[in-house]
Length: 81
Image 1: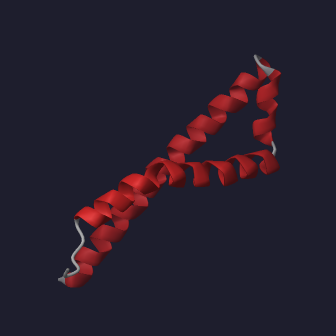
Image 2 (image 1 turned 45 degrees about the horizontal axis):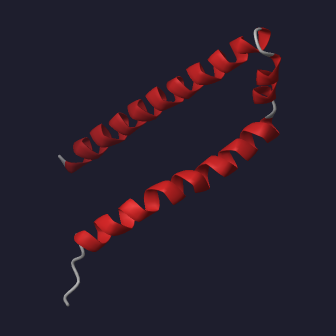
Image 3 (image 1 turned 30 degrees about the horizontal axis):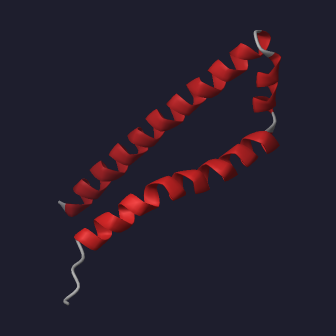
C-alpha cells in the first residue's frame, strides 16, 4: 500500500517537472524567434550568457525572499522560550 503512494507521488513530481521544462522551453523558443526582429536577443544563444544570468538571478531571488521567509520561520518557531 505504501509503495503505491510513493509511486504516485513520484509520478506527480515528474509530471510537474515536465510542465516546468516545457514552459522554459517555450520561453527560450520565443526569445530565439525574436532574434530576427531584434538582433541583441542573439545573446540568449550563448550558454555563457545564460549561465551568467542564472548566476545573478538566484542570489536576487534569495535576497528578495529571505526576509519574508525568516519572519515566517520566527513566527512558527517551535522552540521553548
